[in-house]
Image 1 (cartoon, helix red, strand yellow):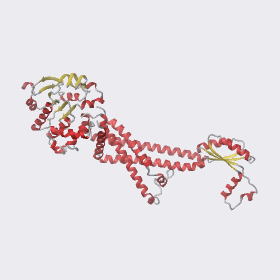
Image 2: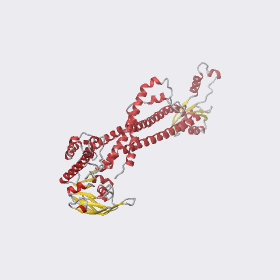
Image 3: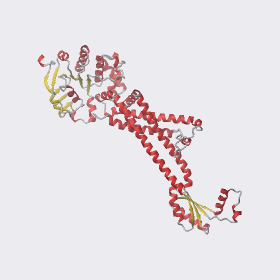
Length: 307
Length: 229
């Protein structure tokens, strides 16, 4: 038995069927492309959010610890060592009260010399604590506040809460929508293959009578499903290429992709995430092939039984 | 080649298609299977290709107990059997050549094997000159010849023909039966179910008559009806 000829046979039969049921093919490929496209959008959006949140998160992870006025540099240094040992803490930086005043001076603008107004530096020494994540910053702040030399601890509690909620809701929304689209694509591929089996009933009967194994009968169906995935992926790549090509001219006139308001990222931000490189291309193909192969396999097993 | 022992086929509806059938067909034999519609001729042929299994009894084809085959082994049994039907199953969007090659392709034959065997089969049935034609361009007799070539191309040990002349004119019918006889002379066992009295009477081969699911006659040089003998 020549496996190569059998494989060639699978592809030829699959192509014959794609041509034979042109309308079904177009509908299925479009659905697969839409599914992959939305998955890609979600992946890009997740990546964009990740970047934005990492940038914001760098601030959210930071706790400012103000020491009591009587705490000197020695006490501050001991406290810094103690805090550094907390598992949530990545880095502790001692901020001398002179440095603090300099920063404050910068915030107010150098036009008015603060020290001249109050006559002395009224600020205490401080520690700048960087935690591993914004979520851990909250519990770390509570622990630090209990330490004896600490006067006040500040961190963006509300922002951290929002950050955690946002990450959760984005993940949920993307997972649910992706799953829904995958189910729709799965059903459409299954139905396209059902039409194909009906259209090929004579071929299938002949194949069974001349002694084709059940997997030889199923083979063209699986390949047909795979081709839906490959064509869908190609369509997505072509559209991405087109979008990247026309993006500069439309980005001014069309500021938002969805226009659905908050919670969605500006499409230009998403587009900045797209790099039509080997990784992107292979991921799109993997999505298409994975989805279509699974659907085709289930359809082939369900629709063609051993006789 | 074929052995049926106490075979009964009872469908789920309760209809008994075959009852206590015993039949032996030797290698290289030619057998006409006759009987009225519903007598069980097609059921008997379907038993041999394991399209159905008997409710009781044993069916042996080419030394294999068909009733005990696993579903995965059935295709390998079918590669030993060629089948031709009254409703000629040809693929309308493929040429004659492609229709015949189809049988080889699905069993994973190489291109060189296909290129060697297809013309031989077409030559055997005398339709090589129509290799590039599509089924719609052929007469009924020619279509049946293509179906026969497709059955032959896999070099079967047993050829089953279920009413192969049912839709053909008398001349084409005789051509098809002549072909079956030629194939039989080359060593292939042939079992042909038919309603065609002229053919059965003309060739005087072994005749097995079925009636209401039972074998009522088995004659070596028989005719269509016993009372006419």
